[in-house]
View 1: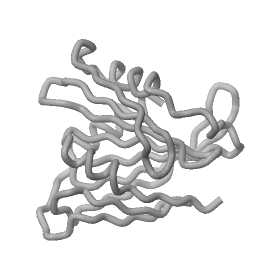
View 2: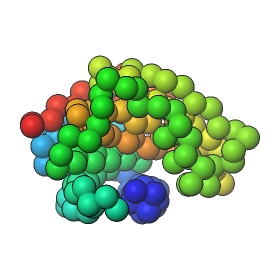
View 3: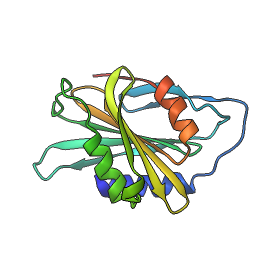
View 4: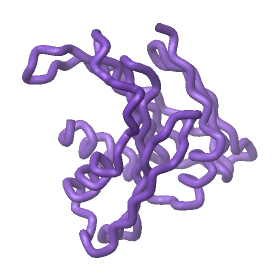
Length: 168
């Protein structure tokens, strides 16, 4: 998973951004449909082909990635119900991801936060070129979503407006 996040983050940082008048994005990838207001103009949406993989336990999952002008939405859908959605998406997961991506540990801040109607977590910390913001939440008992960007204003807007549904 960490390697997937690192590869996706590198793609995010090199993704071109086209200025336009639309601040809202809409997407459909695999079983996920959604939209969000980025709070800034963006007409550049990239949907990556799904990637199938498995955990060491043998549990299989499919990763779906959506990129939009410096924002990355990464969905992971397991083939069986592995997620207990009655438990919160903890800040420990975000902390671990931030550290593995090279964020300065002394600059990390973490918060529980409602995202898409579910209790999720968000965090940020300083990297070489600025700050990195990460968030995560459970979409269903089968799926989770990670959100990343280096633009804090965009992250705040997305956290307020993200609306994702999953066809199960």
